[in-house]
Length: 251
Image (cartoon, rainbow, N blue to C red; front, side, top):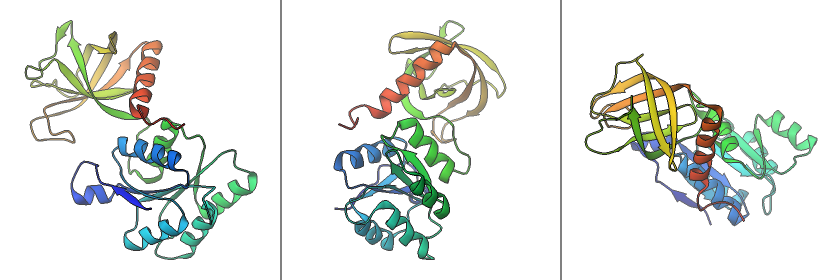
């Protein structure tokens, strides 16, 4: 049975621009892929086979279709072919998920203009392929919402009486909530605490926002890491991977 989840933030038009359709006959894999993409803040609909997918697409065109190769009934390649033969659905980008795809599968995907991703799907690979396929300015790394303590020059950052100032984290940067953001271009010496581990970072301010401004609607600044120990960066990467897959790892 086809289903939709509308948990993505933003206006209706913003959510529609992030509407993805996931097609997979394996219930566990379908749940895993859909939940990952929801945690990447996409609006998700799911279908169990090609017929359900076509029915849903007849109602509303998704921004992207992510389909398993080995569907029950018609295969993912057959679904892809039907989509590309219809002028209405032909422009919709498609990602095919396949375990050890043959050269023939690779050739057909290339001919149809579809991207291919290896199964079992890794969170970073899925995030990257969706970003490069549909985003106007693709992000290289997953970012997550979080709450982490931040120190600047060995003093707690002022974020309105709350000690957990880092609200968004990626491997190469973060957004920190603060009532007194530093000017763009400022360089800061920071310390954040991730799972009880203090991590020293040198960062530069990319942008600053006041109340109600920016994507997070709270005062603060976006930071890019310019110096961080490789082992600490690997630790952050692993922390982000654990957070986005928590409770949804496939059997």
